[in-house]
Image 1: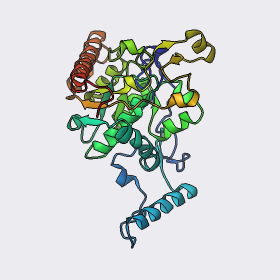
Image 2: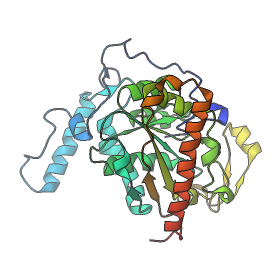
Image 3: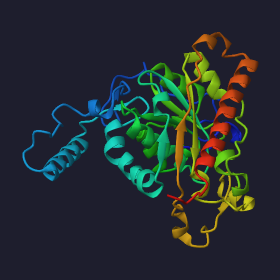
Image 4: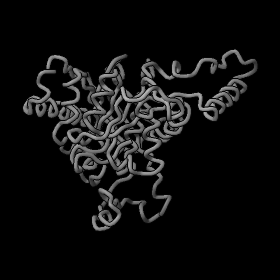
Length: 340
């Protein structure tokens, strides 16, 4: 889940990399369970994260019997605390069994999402997935994480980097942690990448999700390229990803800035349905989504240039231009935003 970043610069799920946060020390505490015991981050697909004895393939009866047995076993583990989270609070079982299915209804049935280029996402090891950000509400981050997990042959989890605002919001903060998210800062990003995780970042931040509909699919500034520095220091390949569809779910016609300042929000949107229809205005419009993962950009040969501003800027510009050109191509494939 994403939100703000570098003073509204490197924001939302890809934001303020150059301001270190109070990230936990992985060597400071022993492993913990049920959110209180630390364990190593899950490196295998979701199937391998399930505790021993949780398989229900041998339960007699039809598939519904097995589903009921599986659900009861899941609830028993949750109530007894027999599950693991990593040092960031990531709960892979809860993410796959509860959070992803909820988002799947949106990305598969409501938005009819088509995914291409999944072969460009590393089969194992670290990868930095960099995407465009849009939509007034950052649903694109959730859709991207779920679609990648469902379509990837290894069913990999995407560890999203979020803004400070996300982790100050009750409930949202807890869900973000449980689903693998963490604050968008260099220390956390580098530790995740160093641990071989797939990390998702949206360098446009609030400038991307808070732009007017008139500026749709025009990439905003990428800030100071903190995501590039994190990739360079760890020698991680960068995978640009272009997302078409998010701009139409809540077309932002205006931003009431005085109200946004009063509520301490980066913007207060006015859309064709919000705030006019109240809670109904929060229902996203059923736009057609296209997601394309572009060929990875290697960085292993540039690890000594992580602090070189020119190298960082040029690489960030290459990523930005790749995403922008891919967006143009996808828009040609999808002439009708609400078509089949």
